[in-house]
Length: 349
Ligand code: DAH
Image (cartoon, protein in one colour):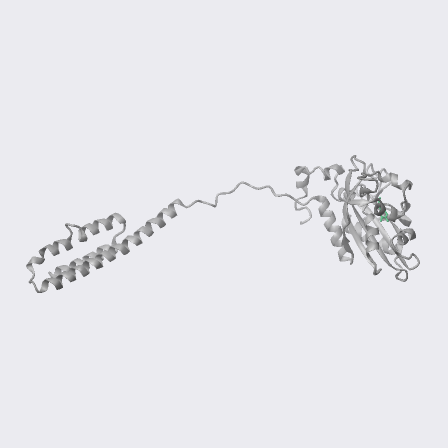
C-alpha cells in the first residue's frame, strides 16, 4: 500500500509538472483526487490495514493529497498566467502603422528677418528694446521735433484713438522713451523692432507694417559720427541682403535728424543696370538715417553740447520683400499657408 501511495505521489507530480493546458490539468485533478480517483481508491481499501497502522497511513494519504492539491494549484496559476500572456500577445495592437501626417507650420518671413537683425545688432553690443504700439502723440511726434501742425506729420496719416492716443506710425517713438528712461546718461546703443500703423494699403504699403529703429548716443568726445552710421548700415545691409551690394547716402529730410539721409542699395534685380523695379535708376531706397537733431536731444533730457549720436529706421516688410523677392506686401499679412510654407527650412540650409 505504501508503495502504491509513493507511486501515486511520484506519478502525480510528474504528470502535473508536464501538463500543458488547463483542460489537461483538470483531467489530472479528476484522475488523482476525484471521487473515483486513485487516492480515493486507496482510502477505500484502508480496511485491509491493521487498526494500529490505519491512523498513520491515513495521515500519510492526507499528506500526499495535500501535496497533490498544492501542485495542482501552482500549475493552475502558472497555466492561467501563460494563457493570459498568449492572449495579450495575440491581441497586441500594431502601433507601427503609419499615422496621418500633421501639417507643421513654418516661421513667418518677417520673423525670420526680425530675428536676423536682432541677432546681428546684439552681436555688435546693442540692446533690443520694445515700446507700446498704442502710443501718445507726445512720443510719436512732439518729442521727435514734430510739433502739432508740422507738415511732416501728413506723410504719416494715422489711426487716432483719442486726440492724443494713436497707433504708432513709426518705431522712432521708442527713441524718446529710451532717452528719457536713461537718467544716468550711459551710452545708448539700441534697436527696436515692432509693428507700426498708417492709413495706406496697396501692393507696397499695408495699414499694418513693421519697422526697425536704431539709436546710438554717447558723450560728444566719443565722436559718434556719420562714418559710424555708414559702417553700421553697411554691415546691416550686406549681412541681410548680400555682401556685394553697394550703399548710397542721399541727402534728405527727417525732422529728428540733421543732417538726414536716405540710404539706397544697388538694385537686387538688375545689379544696378536699371530695371522696372528700381525705376531705371539702378538704386533702391531702403533706409532713413541721420545725426540726431539737437532739438530731439534737448526734448528728451540731453544737452546737445555734451552728447551726440545717430539714428536710423526702416521698414522690415520692405527688407523681407527684397530678401525673399516677395512681390506684394499684403502677402505678408494674409497668412496664406501656400505662401508661408515656401519659407520652410530655406534659412536653415
Ligand atoms: N521714422 C522714419 C519713417 O518712418 C524712418 C527714420 C528715418 C527713422 C530717419 C530714423 C531716422 O531714426 O533717423 O519714415
